[in-house]
Length: 279
Image (cartoon, rainbow, N blue to C red):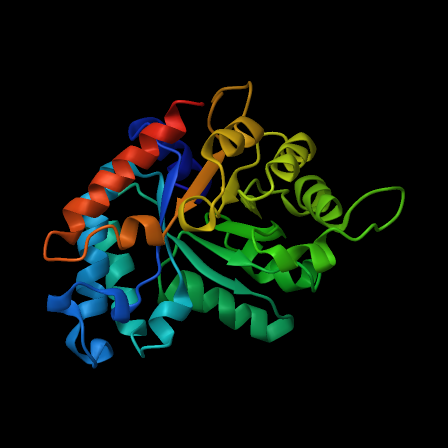
């Protein structure tokens, strides 16, 4: 089953557009998991596994952020985590949030890293070096390639909102280019931040039913109602889907004690239900 097929099945099976971002910061772990040496004692894996197991029936996908593992020399724990998700919660796709962007043989190595080393079902990538920088990921036809388009950070406007001619903004050009040219195998998606609902609606207009990964709700302040109404698909075989709405810190750190996973489940359930009210 391809990434897109797995995502579509998870939307329906779990009645969810929620993506839980796995951004483990040992400094924020509950006391019994805190302390130095997280890269050695397995606490990063233990923390993330507990979150995954508590929320897997509430999500459409998980999104581990590679920097949070690599910074603590915990790449082996990331490998173990992806393997655990695939084994214990089959059918829930895993997006490696790496935002890679390079060309030629280097991009080929990044694709191997994401799909063969870590076993991710999809990867985030930066499109701003052009199609040849993305082609190594597209060569894995069963995998997803999720390209930055209109990011949730305020500084994204420095470049993404530039006029590239005829009144078209750069992020609009990226959306159209991916939808009309790069997505020939139907494996692409785009990142569009929840902090810009008007731009979400514009990207949806340009890309049809292409899935959108939407960070920015929860700790970043994105509005759930505005996000869903702007980005949901409106027709076709799967109306009211089309989104992977990411929440990370609000779910991961909802609890501060040994019951942290229960607290994460409660917030994840509340977030999924809030999203569903507007589908």
